[in-house]
Image (spheres, helix red, strand yellow):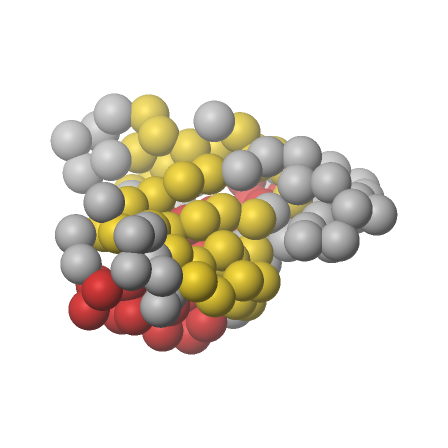
Length: 130
């Protein structure tokens, strides 16, 4: 999965922190004061086992999705799951703390509680209890 971003480093950091991923060797943030060449182009994230998981690529412009309004479509939609309502609410707090936003709150739905979020680039994604 590859996400477009006008700021790949910020986007990669959001997803790395949210999902507990790691950078591919050579894609880590540079030391303070050093040039971030990779962060202006393409960044790869991997699982803790080293499996490729997510990449972020630079684009000059990116229209933020306006979902649930239809002016700018979702373009992509990720679904993530948690085990219970307590975990769902903890994820909500983490997403907001990382710079994401809540787009839709259905956490009180008995059959399928969920939130629809947007990441730092405006890509919508759901987290629901499964």
